[in-house]
Image 1 (spheres, rainbow, N blue to C red):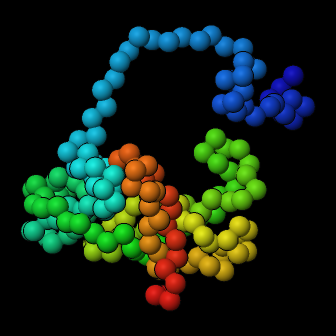
Image 2 (image 1 turned 90 degrees about the vertical axis):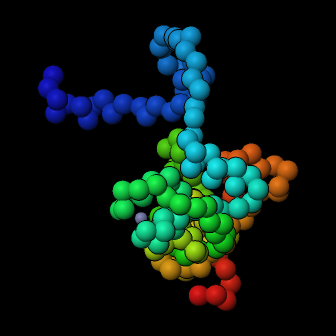
Length: 179
Ligand SMILES: [Zn+2]
């Protein structure tokens, strides 16, 4: 039997739930390793800002750029960045996609709309990847509402539920009447 016969054995896609439910024969091994994950100064402060409902960027006085996500070093000027800048939680859609699979590559009925959002107050091209919300449930509805350049605003979790993670922002929603 040659490689060309593979169509007779189409195979079965494997989900991570299949592993959890023991549907797959495999050997489980738990190494006794411990990790301390350090986010670094810039992202650590950025995440703390999210917990407080703020988007923090970092400014380089040499080239004048304001960077988000923040970094402590300007790769243009080859020097350390200078100061923290609190940015607005509004911005514009730089690019977006309509996804009919979730993170586990399961098909989903209601699509997700991941987008890169250029944050107001940051330099052009600086932005964060997040999800858009309140933009419809079908591809047609989404394409009617969402376009490159769409003005959006962050929808935050309630303050007491925030934990210093990018998910402290639930999604970005269209800003009505501010095209
Ligand atoms: Zn610079």
